[in-house]
Amino acid sequence: MTAEASTQELPPLIGPDDPPPVSIINESGTARLLLTGDHVSNAFPGSMNNLGLEDWVLGRHVAYDIGTYKLLNRLSQLLDAPAVLAGYSRLLVDLNRSLEDPSVMPEVSDFIPIPGNQNLNRAQKALRVHSFYTPYRETIDDMLYRLRTRDQVPALIAIHSFTPVMSGQRRPWHIGVLWDKDPRIPVPLIKRLRSHPENLVIGDNQPYSGKHPADYTIDHHGEAAGLPHVSVEFRQDLIDTDAGAERWASILAEELSDILANPGLYRLLGS
Image (tube, rainbow, N blue to C red; front, side, top):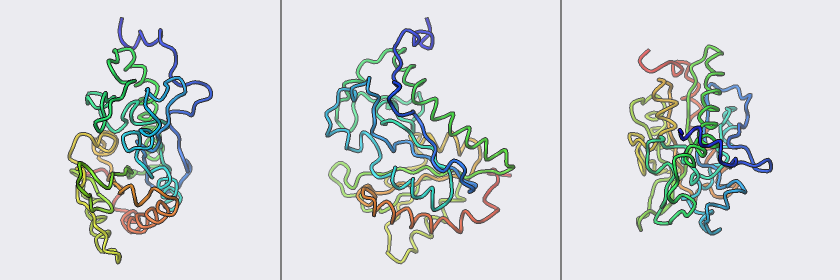
């Protein structure tokens, strides 16, 4: 029996009282832009008992990208752009990984064992993909298709956050701009952010690199399709309050405004 067929023998993971696996905010936004939030939530369906984790783990970066839900809600308003947001924790299935990546359902994350991810069989993994991963991928594809039906080539921006300290080392960057083959948004964005009057510390493919395969949402939905795209990381201690999320959403929206206003941006790479 295939893994797909055997999932029919397993109970559903998402119950009637649980939130949906994906949501869209500002769905009718007029911008030629889609925002994504792969890791905005630390929620778990009631049936999954938080994967056996203690409550303190749920507030850590291993469970979600702290501050990104608030920031994306504000950024979506400021840019008048729709945003696709994940409904559940990255620990169930990491939406910014390919299904071939061994960290897509991690047994250990940041040295913390994840009890509910130990020794998953093929059917259990397939059910998680069906419940959480596929709806998210399909929703992004659907929103991009809607923009394309307006005879528009849309832009795609993914929002993430990173910890202020990693392996005992302070991370000085306020914002990291991640990119690989398409410079159209990231290069001018880095230049503008580094010219900001507050002397911001801006990482060019730091603290993570857009050339790494872990940046799957942008690679799969943006780069592979030739869409203008970028992934933007904020340091979590800057956006973990309402005021911080508001401030940094405003900074990013301001510096993106001229870039996104350029009609020459909206074409397939190489066309």
